[in-house]
Length: 250
Image 1 (cartoon, rainbow, N blue to C red):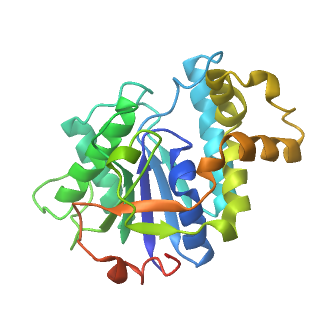
Image 2 (cartoon, rainbow, N blue to C red):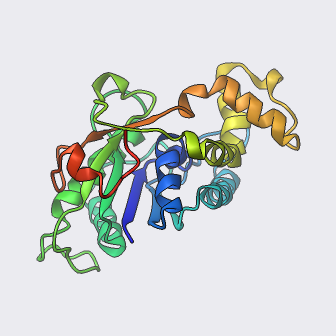
Image 3 (cartoon, rainbow, N blue to C red):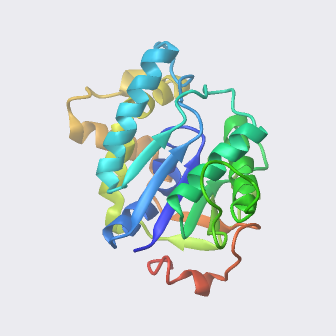
């Protein structure tokens, strides 16, 4: 059994940018963990931070169930919009990597435009991976014998710097990814439509079919093939050497 860790900034990002790949890994009998470095408590136009963080955690677990993800961990004491690549958080992420002992880490790009939390999460993942084998750096978990293979997933702002080294056809698990996105109703049926001026088009939350159609119409870009860049850190492999970990890549 292989072990994968997907590291993002906010609940819903592992699902959006690597949900299909995660579902394919889970279907193959592998263990997948999602880790977000903030609690996402800034992402709403009506809800206050505390109830929003609680709700987003509940949504995250429903999304994990839809994808077959083993566990979903959220740094619930780190606020949305306040993530910084500090030494304290670097060691904390390093501890999570050492504890999960992943063969594969999927993370956000650390450079580029977009949400500062996303870029900070990418930098923290890179810094932590670089140090997971250093025995004398203590974080509460023993060092790993080798670094994991690492891939970068592209978010809405990192396309200009992203390279499509690995392409995954998520068609066979498209429904599972769609249901995982719908589990995050606070985002896909509330906050994102508010941001895009689409609130009047949002169907009743109880009409699952209509909600699926709504997401498919306005967020189709999230439901196509998922692409990843071979990270410039971690254990270096070629695309062909990656196939034993991800036999479904194109």
